[in-house]
Length: 196
Image (cartoon, rainbow, N blue to C red; front, side, top):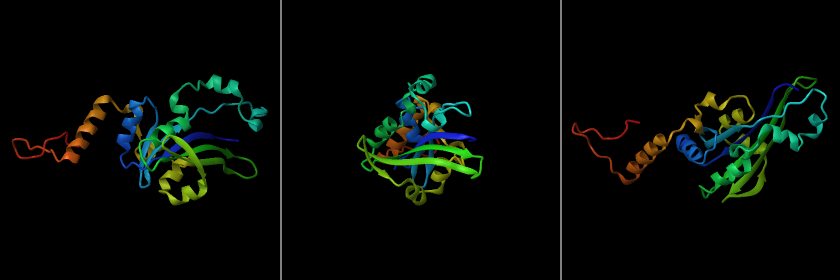
């Protein structure tokens, strides 16, 4: 077994990755947010336990002590909780994709593993969604990121850890001006604002 990929991706209905990253930053979530044609995609790479080549846990999976060593006290690593949080922000909910892939180097070389998808609505887990059908129906960028063929940074990801409180305030003010139509003009007649 070669490279292992363990991550989650949450497909949201929102159309502004910067705003989603700002909301994540306010919740102290360390995630990457990528804007796709299907909505903002929240992505987090998770720590992968490393074993010796012939460890029985390669077959049976990690035990509780492995997770203790990884320090799973980071709220960003709790995919269902993060998905539940974002699902409360939209009446359409979100879809959580759990990704556990590896690269086989033996007889059948290539990517293998499991992608599970589950819908979250109003903070509660719902039905599972066939992951293959989902990935076939959404923006191909989502599939490339989920399967590890591209990284979030390849597609202009906004890191929530890079978003500052002043960035959030600027975005909120800019959005409020657009909604209320309160753009004011400066002395030379140009609209005031931050120029973004």
